[in-house]
Length: 540
Ligand code: COA
Image (tube, rainbow, N blue to C red; front, top):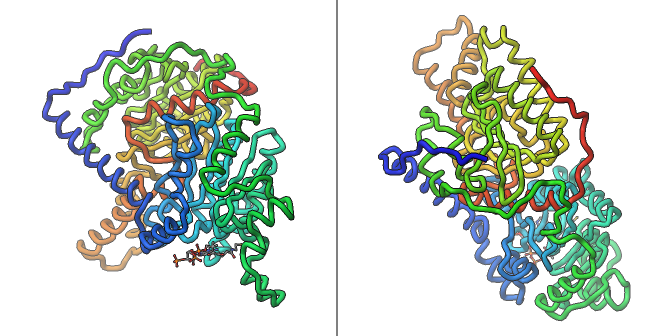
């Protein structure tokens, strides 16, 4: 494969200005991540109480379980950001992938320092999404349970619907039946619905003094039966391990419980992370020739100035080597073969508008990857499909639909990173959330919406003014209408708005993207080959 040339002038004033602006975005990201980890209203007091009870902070718990010196890929740390009056940072739950005895596991861990670890609507969405990731990538789940169950004030948004609390138990039971280990460590009160997380697990460890399981806690028992009972007598570790048998092991401390958990994992007979099944072509990985840090200076700080996504590809792929497909046709999209952490991938990256040729080229390339069983990596930076008379005459709707259909039907693993704009149906054709990429990450400069704010301002104000026909509208009123629309679209296309709602699996620093993708690809490589789809190669 050929090494990609770079036209980036790292000594230019433009590069320096872009880099400075992007470093600002990364600094904001870090600040907000820190807020999710320890911030929020009344959180300090909750943390003090938690530690005062001898309990370990949620991320430290995960660190105690996973193998030393191995990374933890955390999902959607900023879920809930700006929601619920900022009283539920991170949604009150931590999810991600870590290695235990080199076996990958999804972790679902409640953060009891946020509303007692109770499950807000976004926490439920995050819990279910983590289970979806586990099932699709065929990995077991470790539940570190410390939760007050359903967040009762919003119970109608989390209880009965598909993918609500009930859906999480459905998934848990079905994953267990598929042989994907479901293991719980009980580290807090598990009441009502919360009791079913350990009860549906294959093996359960309870920690003495802090872990409790009951269908109805002491207040409910008092109200229903008039019985006054101590929580440990009703559902403590002793009772459930030595009397009821709901729990399989008792541990006298969290540390002891994690040692036991690691012993259990050793017996689960799951494939290790490096146990490749051979269907994804793999060679020893090599870092990119061009440093990933340079991405900061490549992405234009001014969104009216375009930048070339080929420069980003060159900083993500092994050896900066890329074999382009149809390099002289449909040039607003780059398609080609490369490797990420040694795994062969087909890369599709936009440079702004998707024209009819670019859509056809992408559809053709997706089908090639499907035929050759090569995972697909989508790097989204698009304002959407081309509009206008010429484009409609050329059949853009039909050609765009071919790309959308090819993405929808590809059965090889798909991964998406929002590296810039994700507007309109471009989001769909480039494997947005609705098209089931195995993982979707976004960069802090990304934007996602039906259309860009300046376009929305024109479209919606024209519609609104047409509806007000006859009414006298002053230029000031028109300006106010436009400003309101623009403001709405700017807020809603902000990457923090998106990640807060779990439209992605996390906002990540461009510099960490290659490593995150490397882990995701390794998960697919240890799985059996997915059954191929219809396998038609478009030649248009
Ligand atoms: N819904 C809404 N808020 C809840 C909650 C729930 N299920 N469980 C706890 N919280 C909130 C509390 O209101 C409190 O909020 P604040 O920080 O704004 O004051 C915070 O979480 C901590 O709760 P607290 O009771 O002070 O903490 P604790 O550590 O002493 O006890 C629990 C934690 C989870 C054991 C206890 O709160 C509890 O039993 N909750 C109710 C459990 C329940 O009945 N769930 C039914 C689910 S269907």
